Amino acid sequence: MEPYRPYWYEESVSSRDPNSLAEAKHNINLPVITGEKLYTKAEFRDIFEKRAADIINPDVCNCGGILELKEIAAMTEVSTLPCHTIFTTAQPSASQRPFTPQSRCQTS
Image 1 (cartoon, helix red, strand yellow):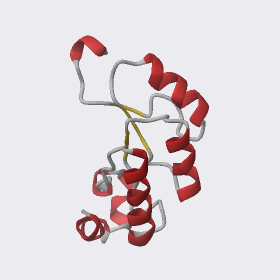
Image 2 (tube, one colour):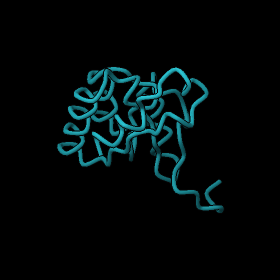
Image 3 (cartoon, helix red, strand yellow):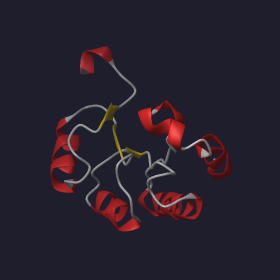
């Protein structure tokens, strides 16, 4: 994939396995993005501590809402990782979450 120069490589391995994700990140010459399937600050802390990603993308509906997302974003300031919120209306379950676009605007 590297010759095609994509912007990032998303979920190269499961975000539930930060050690493997960190190993993959160090063997890939592309920015690695993860976090869509993580739910708590503790799970994100593991990613930060192991330097397992270049960019995180927490889902506002999965991570506990706007306040939790803001706290996760604040954690990125210390770790120097960019934080991008996921626009979950592109996901299949979007019909169950009509408030997601508004939530994303609140955290941008």
